[in-house]
Length: 126
Image 1 (cartoon, rainbow, N blue to C red):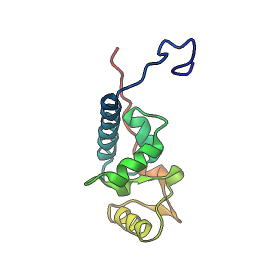
Image 2 (cartoon, rainbow, N blue to C red; image 1 turned 180 degrees about the vertical axis):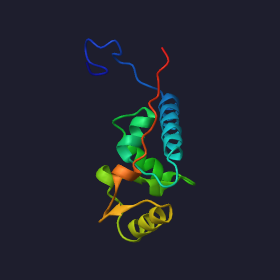
Image 3 (cartoon, helix red, strand yellow; image 1 turned 45 degrees about the vertical axis):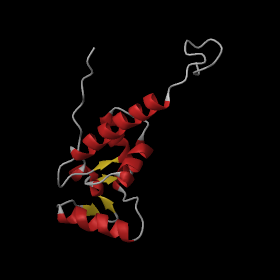
Image 4 (cartoon, rainbow, N blue to C red; image 1 turned 30 degrees about the vertical axis):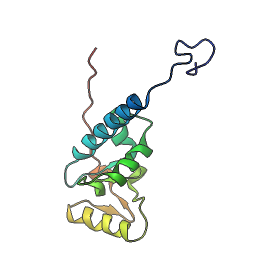
């Protein structure tokens, strides 16, 4: 049922700007924390970081956080299958940084079998 539809319990309910920015701030912090958990020599994908942060459909948000974030190990986050999604000089820099950390490549992609970081499953409190 869509929010605001006839039979929705949230009919007419709107979140205030404060609630919306508080939610996005919490989301950003959880995504940043997930990115920081990736150790040197390992990589993860945008989707896996989003799932680890508790937002399984937020891979694009991970990219936005990386773009706006400061001090994050951005080079450790890749596209699906280990592909570097950046273009130009940024892609070259990402590959050089990963190789300096000991990440192995198979052609143009990272060897995900060897270098993929598996996030620990978070148990939810009930």
